[in-house]
Image 1 (cartoon, rainbow, N blue to C red):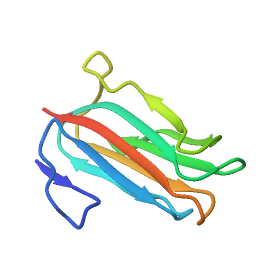
Image 2 (image 1 turned 90 degrees about the horizontal axis):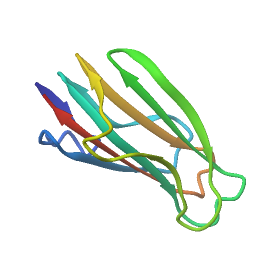
Image 3 (image 1 turned 135 degrees about the vertical axis):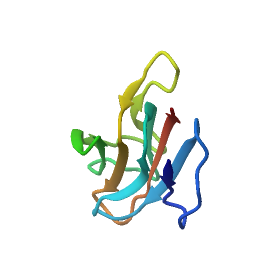
Image 4 (image 1 turned 120 degrees about the vertical axis):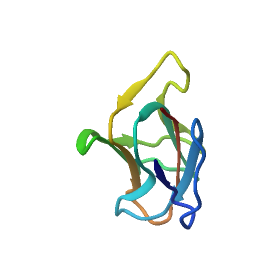
Length: 119
């Protein structure tokens, strides 16, 4: 199985977490995995006062976009999205998992964490 990380092509081990930041309104990969496993969670937070700014996240499993959403940020370092990060919450993928993120304003940074397990 191949695991592509957003951190300059570094290989990420199975049962791991990927973390990335973005100041762009264009979607960028947080994680892009080829193989079989489970998405176990995702969270997104923003920097600075982000009233009126939106963090965006897209979850693509086995080539199908399951979610493409926008979350409004509120106060400093608010978590604007939280999918449980535990073994009780598992979304299986058979061939690929891709999670992308973006932010609506270049003056704001979005922080996205994705947890997953490779089977």
